[in-house]
Length: 239
Image (cartoon, rainbow, N blue to C red; front, top):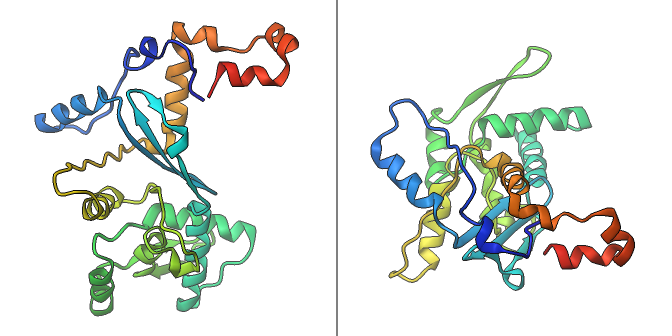
C-alpha cells in the first residue's frame, strides 16, 4: 500500500539501481533516465489470479479509476493445458499443472499480429520449440506458444466477455500492448509502453524502496495506535 502522508517526500526521492545489458546503447540509457523521473502513467499488473490497471497521477493512485479483471496467469496455464490436448499431451494433476506453468513461462510469447502468426505456424515449423519433461521425455509445441497468451486480448477464446486490462511477463507483450492502445487512443497522443525485465518482482522492489525511506516511518502502524483505534487505523495510515 502507498502511504497517504508527505507524498512529495518519497515520490522520486529514493535511490534507484538499474540493470542493463553489456554494450547497452546510449539511446537506451537516455530513455531509461527519462522514464525513471515520471510520476504519471498507468500501471498494468497481472498476477496469478487477477489483473488490475491502476492510473497514477503525480505519484497518486486514482482509486475511482482502478479496474479489475479475474483473468490472469492461472487462466493462461489452464488454457495451455487445454490446447495441448490437441497434440495428444494430457496434463491433469496439480504437479502436471506446474509443469505446464513452467512451459508457459519459458516458451510462450505474445504475437504482434495473431492471425498472421497463426497462418505462419500452419505453413512453417519456425515457431516450434522442444520442452523436456521431468522424466526426460521431450515434447514439441508450436502455435500453442502464442495461442495461450492471446486470451489476454481475446477473452472470448476461453468464454469470457470482458477485455483484458493487464499484461503478463510473456515476450512481445510491450509491442502488442503498444499496438492495441495506439489503435484506441487519439492520434495526437503518444503511447509508450514500458515492460522492464524485472517486472515480475516490481511489487516487492517498490515496497522495499518505500519501506526503507525515512519519511515512511510515520506511516507504520504501532501496537499502541492499533490498541487505541482498532483495525480502522489502517484507513488513516494507508490507502
